[in-house]
Amino acid sequence: MVHVLDEAIAVTRTDAGAATARTHPQWENMVGPFGGITAATVASAVLTHPDVQGEVVAITVNFAAPLAPGEWSIAAEPVRTNRTSQHWTITARQGADVVVTATAVTGVDRDTWADTEAVMPDVDAPDAYAETRIPFPLKWLQNYRMRFVAGEIPIPPAPLADDANAMFWLRHAEERSWDAPALIAASDAFYPRVFRRRGPAVRASTITLTTYLHASADELAAAGPNLLLRAGASRYGRGLFEQRGEIWSEGGALLATTYQLVYFSEPRADA
Image 1 (spheres, rainbow, N blue to C red):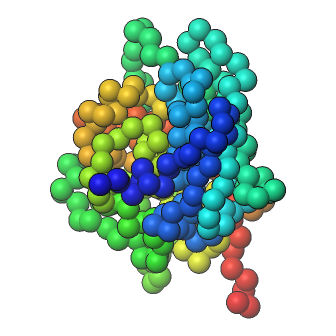
Image 2: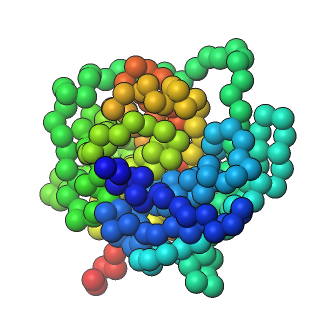
């Protein structure tokens, strides 16, 4: 049986540099599909390219327009191949319209000195926390199980928060090991940080999503089902804010760091 994530990120190669994909109804978001699954599909188009070398180590996806239900095309080009890294430009279209632009870097694993300066938060095991259902009727949320350690959305009449910090354990609802596309999808599983500060009535959508993958394919496969996600934000204004996140394995390995620039618009006072 094919996992729902693998169904969603499946691409069909039409030639060496181009592929087609299809939106999946189980990953619907407020407008178009969940951004993380779109980013993961872009990564899949790179990883299935006949000239790819290594694994995805960095990807930036710019959401130019919402994807409508149906087919979309992805053109990925390796613009530079070095000894240990490969640089990609990607453009996705739906019909004649550009819906996504992206860049990616793939890298070949090398045996070098390693250290992690970031420190995993001191939290209890996942089972110590109650499973949380975010109260939005969004299909993509059904594909994950979340257990919040701190920083749930303040649903009225709960008071708004003074900061955007949040931590939660995340796992697939339908069991699946972690790999690069799955980790890229999970890097967008943080609800918009502005909801903590201004409430869930604020409209928000990701403009650009960058994910850096620090773990090898073998380390991801051995990470176990639960990941710890920690998120925060830096500054809000001019209708935009930046949010950042970390993704840790239950064993304490930093698997990925991620950054977004997000558009927001507060509801009209007369609405």
